[in-house]
Image (cartoon, rainbow over all chains, first blue to last red; front, side, top):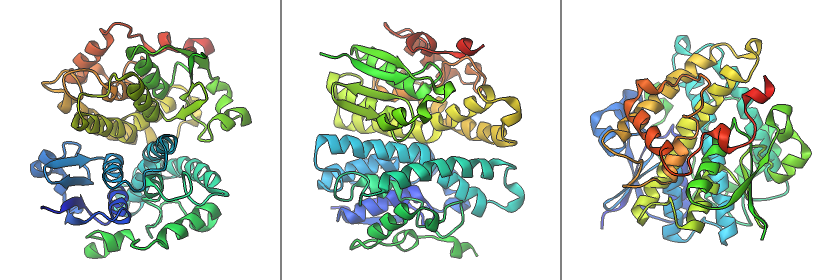
Length: 212
Length: 212
């Protein structure tokens, strides 16, 4: 049987959500490096795989899935892990995965890209401070939610956690300092203490030092 | 039995996604007006209902759901409508709902807010043109996907359609002109020709003329 594959690169927090979910659900997978910084996601070959032009792309036999939330949902359903203990928990898990996509990762990923991976003279004026304001509102929601609880939903880790943490372990500056958000900080420590956890740059191929 | 309620206001495309889904799935519901423009989503009462501080909020008896994608998924599961015909279609439907939240509605909603509902002297410099660039990439993906097909997934309307169209019927300018995107244009015509369809300002309470 062919092993499940994740098309990814180290800098992608969206890919990391899928990679971390696969790993913590004990599903075997192998990474396929996508050379994003040399334009691979814009090639006709990659667009044939995913017309949205994004990583992650996940393949399991003939099945091809894109969008980190869909991959997370599939892995959780297939393995029976990380999905919550009841229908109510599962809806709440999905709620936080959507919130992350809508309010947290989409803004964090873009801001980190603008601040770190785009030449300084190409950074659009005014966008970064605006995004920092939006992100601060999202960190406040997340930090408040984590006050007095160990995991996003219920009493164990779910894909709500592996979604919301997607960009929060990266070292590059994007307007997030763990020390400012104590409940987020201790939750990130809980996730990174789990057996099998690895940093995105250790879990997926490619990182900024390759281009230094 | 208490009727299902949707906490919403006319200007919210995210609420419209839920309202349109409920309507096209033939589920009875009633709107509860949320006075967003006078700060209701920042009140302790509203935050108790939804700590994320957002509409839509949906209640069905004791069940409280937030995030449009979760409400859409619930309504589709409960009614057996708008969910796709197979497990593969359902995954593809979820994929487009996530894509919309991540790449289309989050940018369109914010850009429309900045351009129309924020006083001109408070608009952050540079953000609107930057967002127009991001949105153009999203419209291209959507328009290309709709070339040669009637619906986002399979051969009938699903919540992928009621998600992606969420902001596209609004009259206020936000960098989207239907004439530029012929496949999106004809798809919006197909949706608005369905029995029960109504414009967001006719389906939900509150619209800009209330504040004029």
